[in-house]
Image 1 (cartoon, rainbow, N blue to C red):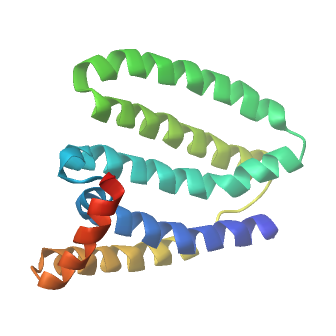
Image 2 (cartoon, rainbow, N blue to C red):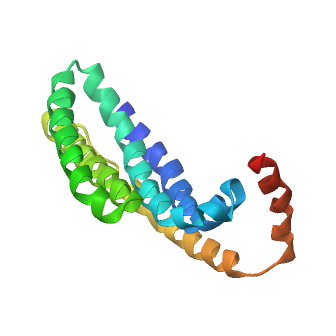
Length: 169
């Protein structure tokens, strides 16, 4: 029951946070790092997806450790590490930083899927799909609204200019 509640509450926090970071990725990069790093937007967006999955997987990882079944994490993690290295050698030379971000996203996705399969099939735990669907749906609506608001050109956004100057020093 604790596992189910943990997944539910992490979904309530993770979905809107990741959607907001995904939609406002360009603005966040400009505010905190400046225009020189604006091309990192696509990498940041890929990392947002991976961060969502990583957050959702945390209770499963804790449940596996608590049930003293770490061997699954060790074996599966080793396979994913080799896969990640192979993908790195294949994608990074072709695509650079976005290729590395894709490698991270793929291996994270496979790790989370494997963890969920293990916790549901082997441990008999359940995933709160309805709560996640509700949270994801509301987060998409929030993302659409945020996207619209970010497209409005208002001089009030100029308040972030001093922050950017401070962060450069």
